[in-house]
Length: 141
Length: 135
Image (cartoon, rainbow over the protein chains, first blue to last red):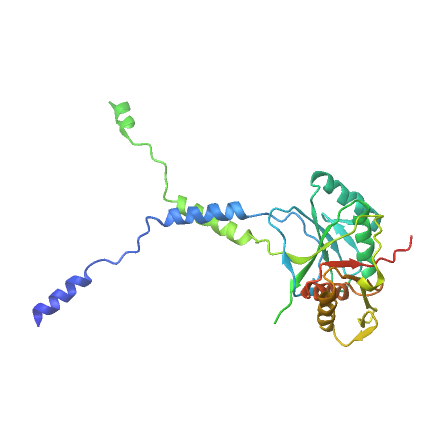
């Protein structure tokens, strides 16, 4: 009996250590991953509640996107500048010059008056910015 | 002799705090990263001043009034989901059927998005937004 007990104790004597040698490698890898994928938000935008839709599609990865914000009161904002409707075409036009295949994401409040949206879309047509996406959130449940 | 002793010392870069720094950086990037999960409904706008003649029977109109009441051609709808079935019926007859969304200028943006969503759900390819801009 006594002998047996001794043997048991011996096996427990092995120290249980978590191998930490590769930890720093893993952490470095994660760090690199997050450093590369991080895109800092440059635009604050407006406080809006997005409309809901079921068929929302993702923005294609390779596409450059410009955001046009329309608030609940019908106020329009691009790059955090509050604009009147006839200033929209100039602002978007400047962006279009740099990137002719620009996708324009309209981030509009669900309760915004449609007249404003319509006017903004007319402005887009004016400068031939025809790729438009209405940003929505997925319907829940 | 004193100089020699000094030279024999190995020049070490202290690495014990490196992992702490890296962890800190990692946490910083973890917290600040926001993945681009934007979603939306695509729409191709027509070029300015381009008029295409389409025969009346190949167009369906969807109307919404400011209160959110909807009409599909001449049919008043109880709820938006009916648009899907009606659109599918039209598309079964003609793949290229055009759907025009008419929203009141005082109406809400959500109404337009709802109709656009339903038309997309029924796989409508040709969708247009009617404009009533006063110039």
